[in-house]
Length: 142
Image 1 (tube, rainbow, N blue to C red):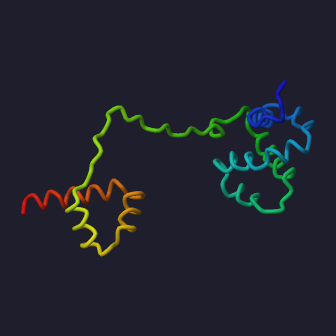
Image 2: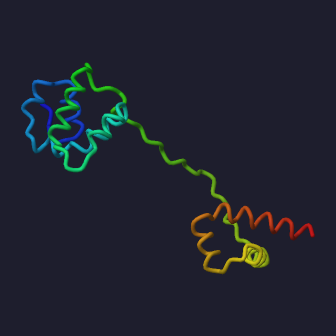
Image 3: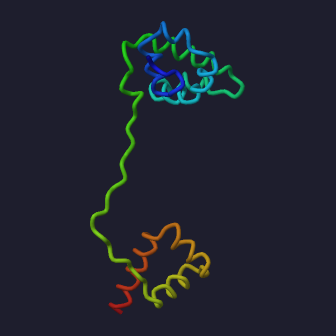
């Protein structure tokens, strides 16, 4: 027996057990309306956008998706989307500490203050450090 209050049980129920879906309470249809619209938006984005209106009857939205789901024999694979895993960093990178001369040159060259430099360091650290390393290399050459 599938539990209609749980989202993925509800999804399985819509696709595989239309007779049991007829007995689902309206409260549970309202409860799952947002996520059902999200799931079906993967395959039917235009239809999902048409049903994505404030004030629309959520029960009718879920019933319409159930009508679409009746065309499938089982739960389709596009319902279960995969997420990307975060890359594991096995090697520990040595923290780059820019020289005071390079920082001073960068601030003067770009006509920014220490506050803007701190924001760059906070939001675009890698790009900033790349530019500072290039400045340091050119300072060593000359």
